[in-house]
Length: 320
Image (cartoon, rainbow, N blue to C red; front, side):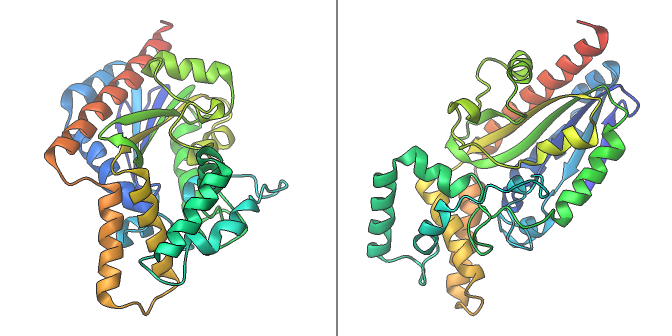
């Protein structure tokens, strides 16, 4: 995990931009960060506005290296930032779906697909996706596993945020993701606590199209334990404004299939080389679209969001 501080290092306001929270999604976030480092005009605006920008690259370095969404312990880092001393919401409904989601053979049989589709129809698509994706602690070998304790990435990111953020008065956070929504569209997803004041502030920064999964308006189900939650613990005196920038890649069915295949591969380490290669290619394709058009859409929207955050943090410092 790498960190770089640019803009005005001593500014009262801080913007955090993170990439690779879900390993394989790091190609997109890394591209956005590299573009920012080469954007002299934007960096000049940050320095003039007394805004520090903290780039945290590859929050999940293992997943980035091995084309996995999960980390070295099969943990979804964006479900790991919970209070492990408090009573846990295990999401036991996930256990009933696990054997269908991670079948014994891959590609899955038509019978498996039909059974999974039947369960989705029975539950309703929204409920089904919430059970599958919101986070679960009942199957350590399953999808979207939240873990049984804080991960290495959890502790390391907290240390970085604490060292660079504790002295700041205002902190913005943009966490770059891929895999949900229309291809190339960056959905702005509110990534703070369920607080209408903080949500209103995020919309004032980025626009009325900031979506919240708390009210069902987002393409994402409500996430339990996203990485942005650590700012409340590590920088308790700062005013936080968190947002996930989620870029669409492939249809949801293809993305979920890629994740399912990847988890199957983890439980079949002796899988033939051809099967392994196919699963890894599917993962890369599900979370990164290798075209100039997609990359252009990504970088344009990222620059807009970063500029909006820098402008808001500069105005806040000036009392505007």
